Image (tube, rainbow, N blue to C red; front, side, top):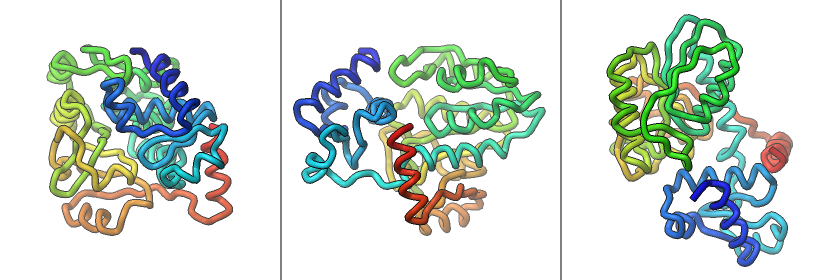
Length: 274
């Protein structure tokens, strides 16, 4: 089922029941949690729903529905943070470099910040990143392989094999889960396999991840956290993870996110209307 059709079905459910759980969507459509998250983000950007912990509520009846819903996601788990992380990550890219950009919404934010740079070569398996950079100053190569329409990515053994013929200065990788013991993990084993292949072909690996990804083990382990040379996240990352990452000898860069009350309210309105 295409993403648009699935989102229409989610809206039908919400129109009737006012609230939906991510786990229910995953089971019904047999898709990954990451796919569901992207569906809900797309609907929220249209101002149709509001994401809550564990699911979403219909925005039309939000005040009434919220009484029985799980807590609304705070600022610190949304677009503002991903945009700030992406901007910080992009500052690590310099003219003349060849880089790998993996998949994910925060990686996409990184791509948005390098569009006007010159003499940059990007290899990616993300169709969203490709669309973002295709008419920019950046020279772009797309990895060949199996197309996942829901995730807007290209993967599989063909994509991994394509990486065997190249070297890059830096690989910017993503994760669905990151823990100190479990390492970097993803919902899909295919995605984890490709992340591993990207790391192998890079002189330096930068993990670009929202703070909400830390403390979670996803289905498929990609690699130990120590394989990352740099971690770029936001300043909502817990002190425990900040300290442990630095103890591992990994450089840590935290993007500052608006935190005072007045700015939080503005940020929330921006997210609702984006």
